[in-house]
Length: 360
Image (tube, rainbow, N blue to C red; front, side):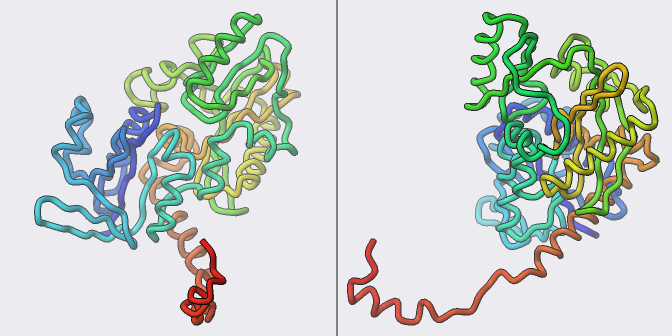
């Protein structure tokens, strides 16, 4: 059996959203192929190795008690190590599926930890994950793709540069609202984006799957907001199914030529951040479909965007198989590179210290 660790939770405002995605992943992994190893990261950053109870939705009604009842975990040299009392257990991890959303999980932090620990994982690497979280950095990287401009002409959207799930995002129509919205956004990040509102434009999203230039795209979707802004409630409280329960039109009611152009831009954006595995790329399209703006890229989309791939004839269990395959492929590629360099630079270090030439 292949040992698959599912990492989720974390120190993020999207902690609960991550749990929903992880549950969907764990319930759709092929039990005949994989031994599922839940690794839950608490809101204060503790890694907890779970058991089959962690696959039950009702288990998460009391998050505070989990760290007291289950052993803490350490990731090290391709394994997960747990200790309880005098007992120590070490288990091999063949691949980790990342189901994080937001800071310290989606932004490259955990990806860096897994790189150091020598553990293959699904999705984007450190740099691509960091870029995927930082909307201001994205604007520079996507300079060759049409995008909404930073502006001071109302109406405007105000967003924290780092964040997701529509948290901290406000549409404003005057200076008073702008000042308040900036304060809200600053509560989530030190840098804030103020950009023009593409009035009348529809949101169209698409998912990209693959490594490097060997990419495929899903069908497009059109999310249906209950208000002017697609809210957290729209995304995650519609039927209790996470992003899969949100109201949406799939495929999006757009022209084939528009869908083709969006797919082209999505692949370009994915390559621009050096993406790997999967991402969802969000666009804004004018009513006449003559103008297409890239809005942002999401390297760990809610519910793994499986609803888009199911409509592209790739069922969720097969999608997870593919993500694991891509994660292992990327790991093997990185592992084939030289990471050590033989040198005698330390041979005379003792004499250098004695001579006083090496200063602190």
